[in-house]
Length: 316
Ligand SMILES: [Zn+2]
Image (cartoon, rainbow, N blue to C red; front, side, top):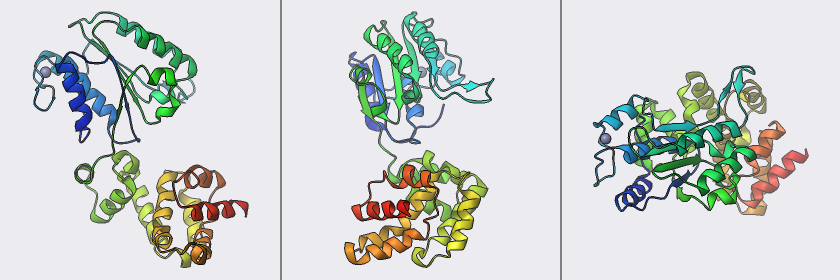
């Protein structure tokens, strides 16, 4: 089972509800991508099924028979719904479909083999299509005794309100600095990559997973060098870098590095005087594919002046 860092509040709330025998039958864990929500759901599953959980820190014992079966991935009363690989099309399915949801709810409706308890986890629940979500609703309305549903998603608002309102909502926060550093240290990043990962990751190790790929890491360090003095960047080199890497490297990393590079300019900006400075700085990377700019720059909660600038870039 993956080690879980952070999320203590959620685990405590769950453990206390369990201890006082008022555990809600469906928990919805939501928060940004890459912070360990699925690992947390696995931890809560263990806590729920363990025969002698610790009531001090709400951890499963790791020793009993259910814990051993969970560790081996062979517990008969646990099931998971997630996006599946389509062998015919040789790629991942686009959504979680109704057959998967129905089959999983059928599993949950049976009584447990090892105890009266059963757990179903739905990972990336925002990928359920409408039919799948409607089917899930039925399971939420008629829970079987002892069944626990753990729904994990990063985009809460893409789940129907009818589902959200029937679950115990628990927000999962990004990792704090210590925990983030702990995870990154365990991944053996060198000092410069550590710094880059801390600034780009914002508490989400998953967001900077591309830095574990040596070639991607090297490319992103080159990108950082190109952005040091954005206004005087060599446009030819920027263009060349983009042409070479924009297909392989996650766009949010590329875009966020540009936003970080313009951050100081923005902070000192007396908006109107320096907007032309920012404008020329962003023009240096104005050769972005339009879909990248739309998808990653425009929705950023950045000051109006940057929005204005990006709009101007797009008009060019
Ligand atoms: Zn145990």
